[in-house]
Image 1 (cartoon, helix red, strand yellow):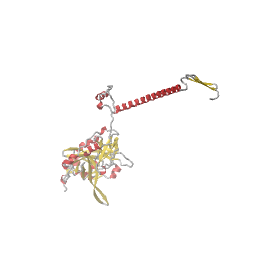
Image 2 (cartoon, rainbow, N blue to C red):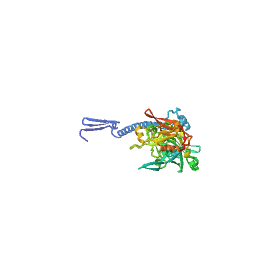
Image 3 (cartoon, rainbow, N blue to C red):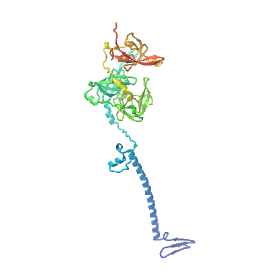
Image 4 (tube, one colour):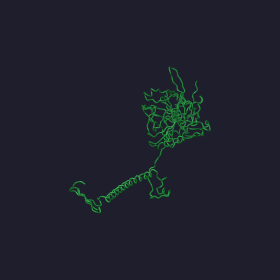
Length: 444
């Protein structure tokens, strides 16, 4: 009992007043003391918890429902009904119901697997390795030395016809060869012969007689499928296969980095190429650039070797190459050297064009016609003194040695096309001249 405090209670506990000094506090059933007041407080706390719980539940339900609808919509977008069926058709197959609204303008999802082993396994039998055995001549202190120098490249089997297996490659892979050796997927080798060359496009077709192959090899190999490089898109995945560094067939992959890329070649000519970041190194030349479905859309041609340049390989577009390949395949295969008495003869005095003349005066590299003999095949065809022969039957001619090595397969009486560069109006113009080769006159 504190001073100045007065307490009074009613008998039924309905109302209690507390007075302390001048202050009086009253409690009834709501604020009352005792058992009835405690029960009121519990009821009010329970109600508040119930209201809060209901609010949280409703909020969670709203967000969960929205999330479910978003996931469901995304799944429908990614996995529409097969074969363009409407939702109604798809639902009817599973016994479900739908609104019957057809789904249109569905974006198709393309999935590209990192595993390309299946494609490689399918196309590898159409790939070959090529070894070019050529003779290099060099001079030291007045002495001339000859040495056989092999070089490696690649090829693609494109057709079987008239007893021949036809293989396309780069011209620089097979040019100036003494012998060509082709290795197939089963490890067997065969001798190949040049059927046709196009130095400007850097393309060549070589042939292997089918009867020189075993039955097992003929079953192991296949013909490549040529695609359409005009339909390529930037970023499209590609596969490169070739005899990299002469170590045998190897596989790299990447994407289309650029289309119609103008590149200057080592001989000064320019070409339009497919650029890819798939690794293309020495020995890959002549190999295939493929789509992920295994179609050949390019013939690997080279790589920029400048310091600091990486991931820039080039391939000749197959759509540009196909007409030339078709023409080269139709040419006569030159397999046997003609006897000396039957060799074709033009009737010119040939001289090599020195490299310094090309550099200083822009004279084309080839064979300079120093003179034309009277009454010979060259004179009759219209070849003139001062002309520079740069091609013989489509094959690039860089020196008199190239010309003589090429002509040893042609007989007198055969008609071929000779390409010459002629100086006119301060510049060199190109002319294709048909010439019927004559017989070499008897010395007397």
